[in-house]
Length: 318
Image (cartoon, rainbow, N blue to C red):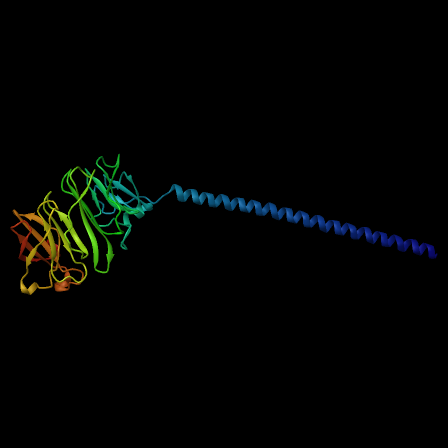
């Protein structure tokens, strides 16, 4: 009887041991299968995410922002998508200009970068020209065949970080570049360069001797040019004229009526009107006479050396 009980007890222990082993094996197998499924699921999910991100990236690359003309003129430009493009048919077709966008705003400039700097380019049916700085070189990139081919000319090098910049052409051969840099408070270095071969080569004129901040400048023909100085608290026009293509410069004289003393202070670039030179003189950055927008109109009968007051000019009369 005792032996039978011992046999039964041994058998029961064996059964319990076998069941325990089977349960352990089942748990191990279950854990293995679960981890395998998790890995497969994660891998599949990652693959989907990667594919989705790839699709988004492809859409971003393949669908740049549609170009829109800045001024909606027949000949116009765009700075969208971090590149300069020009159009000759109101934005229906575009030509990319081979200049890095940042180079167009290099130097001392903190203004709007969605439009080109006033005066820094020429854009017409016959000529597209863009003035910019690259490292310490001042460069003009230009095309005379509506962007099919481009030429590059170095205006000068080395040159300090550029502040004021202006380029224009009077005709197909004669053009000018006026630049300034190395500003210290209200003083800076400025220089004038001329071309007589359509922009292929440039020569520097003599120095006017004025180190105030330049506000504007330009030529009305191949021999007669003007430089206007004073952008910080000007009190009267500081105007220089050349009649020999920049070989010599002399300071012009403005006869300003007493009632306009210290009101009309910054001269712009003159134009020909009824066989005489006329120039508008604005109120500078701090003018408040009649809202600060009214200008004085002056005329010269000696090619810009002396100027006489004519009349006030309202903003809508320019």
